[in-house]
Image (cartoon, rainbow, N blue to C red; front, side, top):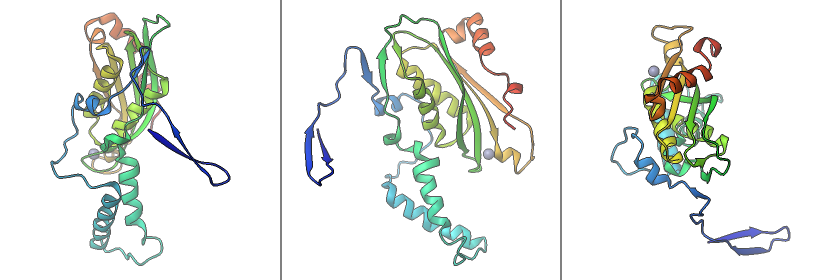
Length: 245
Ligand SMILES: [Zn+2]
């Protein structure tokens, strides 16, 4: 593998660096293998467009939607909205539909002999309701019991955010995050709870101003051991404590 480094005086240096290898005290997550073991988001069999083509096609179609709504696309304020929306879909809010956007994760051996529950609460994320294409604003709480492998704490956020950046229903997102963490950490003892506000419920339809939706997916000891389950739920904020509205 070669890195090209451009130095200050314009010279290019070709550096050789070793291929990532499976080290004895850690390993890099195999993303295609991982994602094949997680329940899928429904996808068509059509060939995927490359990101730049996708943006052009989305912008063209979004322009048509705006025109059908009667908007004046020559107005300064609106003229670039189709391109802005297309870029937002592909690069931001739906980036989790492309496996190349999965975070780079190296799992390391647990040398601390830590064997209790680890809980990370209040992982904030934004997702998109696949029924209305409106935002879901959420918090995830994740826990696991270490079986020999540990992760940098920010990687929990990254995994949550990857699956959030898809058109979603909260139930599927919860299961995808839980299954991915169980595979990455090589243990069944993983719990995920998600609390979320659905703006499609808040801003249209029933226009509910205060509801919050909680979903959970627990497996292994979190499911079979009532006291561990109770300890986990006692460790995370109650919906009333979240102040998300
Ligand atoms: Zn919705």
